[in-house]
Length: 402
Ligand SMILES: [Fe+2]
Image (cartoon, rainbow, N blue to C red; front, side):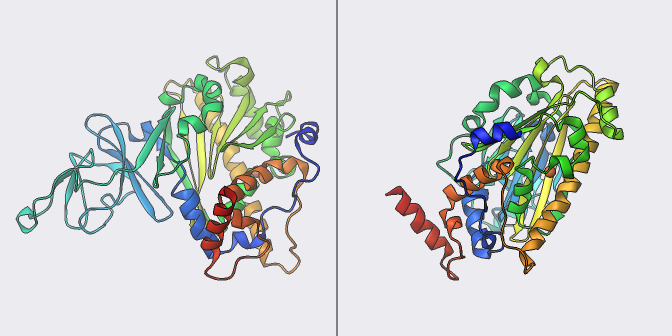
């Protein structure tokens, strides 16, 4: 957000001190987050074209849950739990792959049809009659929005992903995201020894772009702005600077990027980011579309996961532009990872006394507000006594509702 925009949007008395430090290290807080955020909110698993053919599958694990997204022989995409009904083994072992006619559990070879129904147990004469639907792989709630596959492990009162993303519907339509294809291997992932919120905190503000991200600054630093989190989404938008920049990747990107005639003029030389509470961002560029997210593994360990998608027909120049924007993104991500590690390490320092947010970091504050609305215990200056956090949070939620 630019300085003049920030001063009109930010109330005088807002809390500049962020979430209390204990919320980044508490095991009990992490358990509540898993339940209230990662099992009950929509998770962006992949794109429909990551599972383009029958039997093609992709696994998505989070907060102790395991899903498989798989395309059936009827060409329907489905999400099922990656939990064999026999003894609970994973039914597919690889992160991504291809099943032939059936999903065959690697433990005792129970097999399932590509629609998840039970096809047959090994040595069926040793078991009772098992109904194929009742004993099929359990379905996971799934919704496809503009080609992206979202899943949710726990039923929730939360709106559909279509409702959550409604503000982007018109803006994103010209990118024709439904038709995109995985770019090469598409997926990347990286593990960081930090709390997942520390990653979000770095990502939720552009105040650090001029100093920390020389490439982004040269690409769009003059025009970048963040809009705060509202109703589960945030929006950042940046049109390119007039000058082509000095850095190799930025200069070449600007000079090879062809006119993206399928986009309105306002978006042909711009990057758009759609933030989705609690842990995903879709980035839309003239040359490609990508997403990234945080997968919390432990209170102090997070996997960053992302994927890149290309247009089905790509000129040589568009392909080169995609390569260069990917390179700028990779540099930015590496720079952010270092900053995340440093700010997270600070909680061990005797000098660290909490944070002080600028008006330009209003995105961090509004994201924290969304967290506090779900988990009001995050307002407490000190961690609740051991063993009481979940109960304390439930009490606070109940008292707010009454
Ligand atoms: Fe950054």
